Image 1: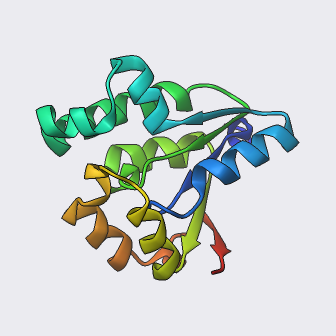
Image 2 (image 1 turned 180 degrees about the horizontal axis):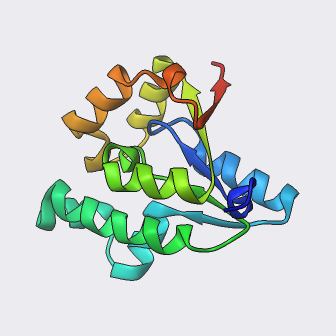
Amino acid sequence: MSKTKNHNIFLIGPMGAGKSSVGRFLAKHLDMDFFDTDEEIEKSTGVDLGWIFDVEGEEGFRRREMAVVADIAKRSHIILATGGGTVIVPENQTVLTERGSIVYLEVSLENQNREWSTISVAHYCKSAIAKKFWKDYNWSANPFIVHWRILP
């Protein structure tokens, strides 16, 4: 595998970190294709994420998300904004690590709460598993992740 890992950039972080906004900006300025896992899931299913969580639960949503991540990560020269819980699934961690550079966007709790309060139905950010993951994971100990801090 090449040193640049196909020139892919995977943006991870909790909901409200700005992954989609930063991803669109970078894609435009780096002349790369941009994808957002949540948008791709909605496009492929024809329903919103809230419906998927209501009908299939978090487990069903994560299966769909895993398939989208695996499919998009096969491409080259892309930027992918992942969902807030994407990296709680070990298979997604493996795919992202093997196929590109991972950039973790950190956000203050204040900004994160502000973002969450603007979303009418955010089932995926209410996941106790995802919240615990973002709170407890030791990001500085992972050598595969570039840490990018977004200040309040």
